[in-house]
Length: 277
Image (cartoon, rainbow, N blue to C red; front, side, top):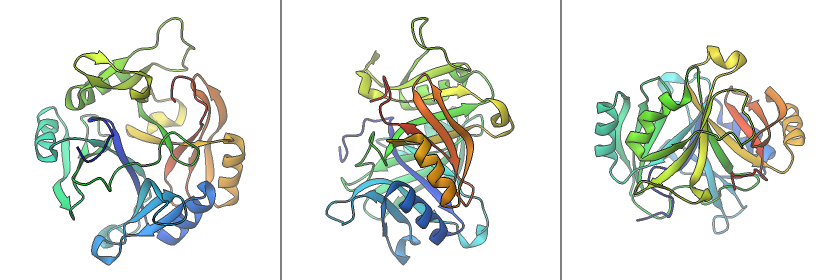
């Protein structure tokens, strides 16, 4: 297998952008990232990394310019999950009630990718790696993704049944001895022969929407690690972004929801997250 990232787990995250220059400046200064443009052949898709040289770079995610037919579309972050056969996984997803947004397409010699919407309308991707040069190489550290969260105006266990069946996940409802959540919640784990794996296999959660989120479509939130949620939130505002949810302590640690200058919502979260390391 080209990657050590478990099957079914998040393997990549990226955002579209109507203004590459604005977004690159924002994210690179916010998280001290470097960027590597893949060139005209791949539509100037840009890889975002920790590290300043190609030899030292570790991939965090990507940024893609909006297509010419939809240049003004607001930016959003999305997540793709690791599958061993993208064509088969896409067919399985459709049978389970998903909608195909773009059919599986091979990207160079590196991967096969399909864009989907789950039965509740949430966007996600299916990603079949074909080389060891793709997927996250930085994870669960400051400046990298530490968590994924699905936000849904309904029972999260019900919404996650689709993913559990498609990607072989385990769902874990918090026990009575765990810190309470503000809304119904379920933990998400990669799954191995019917047994929940070690703690490192827990990659995210799903929760019921709260407040203004109720008006939003179901969606995946990408959560980046930081040593200081409060300082990073303040820095985002200075760089032209805004704060959608002010820094707050939740059962997993301190967090905030930010919005990029071009409209992408994302979360920042303390990297010392109990049960999420």
